[in-house]
Amino acid sequence: MPSAGDAGEADLTEGDLVRPMFRLAWPLVVIQLLQVAYNVGDTFWLGALSPDAVGALSLAFPLIFFLISIGGGFTAAGAILVAQHTGADSGEGGLIAGQTLSFISLVAVALGLVGFLVTGLMLDLLPADPETAARIVPLAADYMRVFFLGMPFLFGFFVFVSLMRGYGTTRAPMRVMAVSVAVNVLIDPILIFGFADNPLFGWLGLDALTAALYAVTGFGGYGVEGAAIATVFSRAVATVIGLYVLFYTDAGPVIEVDHLVPRFEYVSKIVRLGVPTAIEQSMSSLAMITLTAMVSTFPPAVVAAYGLGNRLISLAFLPAMGMGQATDTIVGQNLGAGEPDRAERATWLASGTIAAIMLGGALIAFAFPEPIVGVFLTAETEGRAATLAHGSTYLRFAAAMFVFMGVLQVLLGAFRGAGNTKTALAFSVVTLWVARVPATYLLVFVAGWATTGIWLGVVVGDVVGAIAATAWFTRGTWKGSIVDEEPEEPEEPEPTAPAASVDD
Image (cartoon, rainbow, N blue to C red):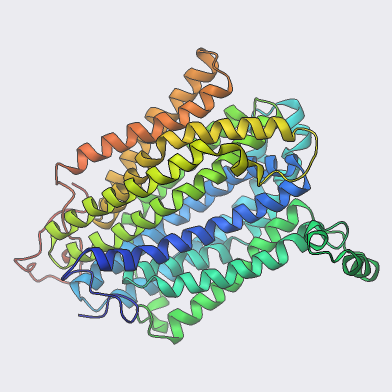
């Protein structure tokens, strides 16, 4: 059987579970941390620019994520198929990876073009407060258009991480991501502020240098657009390095040039598995857009606090996302190898571990919300005090859902790894559209709880979703391999491999 990861990483389908799980998971957690570093970096520097700039990200990000989520479902499908073929030792992991890479590249170009053209229309659909519409919406549009132009570079790295994760290799993507974040950190403040009153140079005591550079270049920065340019450029660096790793090293699945030529039987399988995940992620982003629309009816300080709070919650979300992705790979490889009981044990182990980790994060967030939020509001401008107060309250409410959020992500990872992408879709719908969105609307606009209804609605969603997903997981109907459904393999499946449809 081929190695399931980097040199020194243990086989995911045999022997001890704990050590290989954590060897697979910790680089994924670091990748997620570095991923959020982009957004946190943007938030930090834009917070130094103005609260309105932070509010622009609050409006822009859910709309951006909506289009990203469509293609994201297909990258997840590629990871699932690579994981199960690696576990089954079918020899087709490289072909699946190549098909995913070429298909997603076409999807990314199309989505980027659509996003650029409809940016204004999407923002016009938000029922914004008049002050918010005048001050924040134009900034959000500037950020979004640059971001959409760079969509192929963003997806290039997403595909690289997904394919390597499915193969069981997570350290190489982590290193590539670290390089990309380093580039972003270096250029972000320069592209936002230029050399005129750049706070980074001021903190470093280099005011004379920045004044000289401004005198020579006259570069005063691009503001909100600069944050988007920095992110796109640093992702482009990551994409180039990722492609080199895939094609010129043996760290992941072996991809040959002819693997990039689309083949209907493989593209159809990617689409069949990817569409439910794309719908799941799109439903998530639509829920965020709906919630953002509700929040945009409030003054700018609330909009900024909501966006800032979501970014801080995304930091707490990192361990959950990393463990969920590791569970995805471990379940996929073990089901491919005919080890459903081992896949179930791994899921329960991951759930217990992430619950303990998230509890620690919840206690910190509940005890120290103001110092945490205050780090990202360094500019002493109008609205800072109100934004800080609202953001701190939001973070304290959100702490109550951290454990539930972690367990839910692990269980969704298990369903996806088994190929039950429709099941994962169902519980995402329960979390967001059955619980969070209706609860927020009722609490804010019917019960009249104002901002308290916003914060509490977020908590209700993950609590309900986690309880429902746990109850379903215990039924065991998710267990099954999809490898022996390949059209080009007419032989009867091995007696040790449980035969089941993609979705029970």
